[in-house]
Length: 287
Image 1 (cartoon, rainbow, N blue to C red):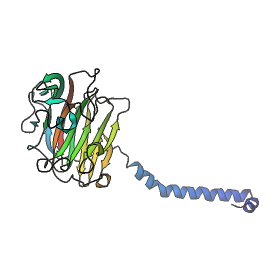
Image 2 (spheres, rainbow, N blue to C red):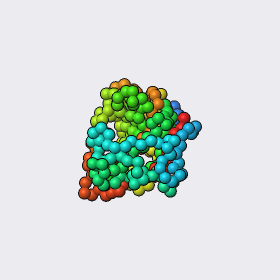
Image 3 (cartoon, helix red, strand yellow):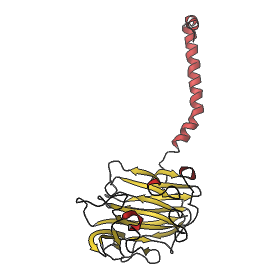
Image 4 (spheres, rainbow, N blue to C red):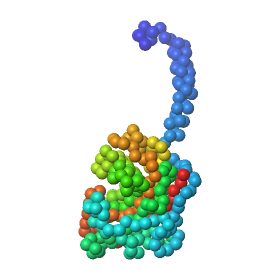
């Protein structure tokens, strides 16, 4: 506005001008209201299970060893500590893995066994169950402590035909025991594996993952993987987010394990107490 216009504007004209501005603001509010409502509806809090056709489940309702129709074992130390310089020897002993009181219990022990100073367990559905796309979820209470490395993850079912990371890896939940408030969701593929993996962390506020159960899940479809903790969608990874080939277009199988040591977490220290147990209430897969 020029000073001349201000001088000519008397009280009545100011009132008319104010009415015009009020009407303009009202019109803008009406125009923008649908956009505001739309933005509110796309928050990161989503319903956990959008896929409801249950195709595989283990409720761990029968005491003893894990169901052999669903789970097999990795035994030993693998190549260079399963490729991560881990310190444990994986067994199928009940001291390390069993179903009891409605829970799967995977326990890391500090003990001398087959040349290793720690034991634990790692089970997988390879050759027994795999699926392309869907919702994969598990309800888990995590262990804790420096050097403790539990995970719930998927590996490409073609892992025997092509080398890792070409087969693809989806870490639904990966966790450093020394950081009991935080988990990560990660993908590994050609050009973005190991230290170059694509991931995002999720942290609890005023809570820890070792004090109660939480649901960890993904909903995976063509060209996207959504990562959840409980009812929170905290990350989405798409082909545009990775720095190499998108290799999540074929079946994957499930792995549950508790590692000890390795590059991701470092070695246990004098403050790490043993045994440490991961409790799994259920594993469910939907289409």
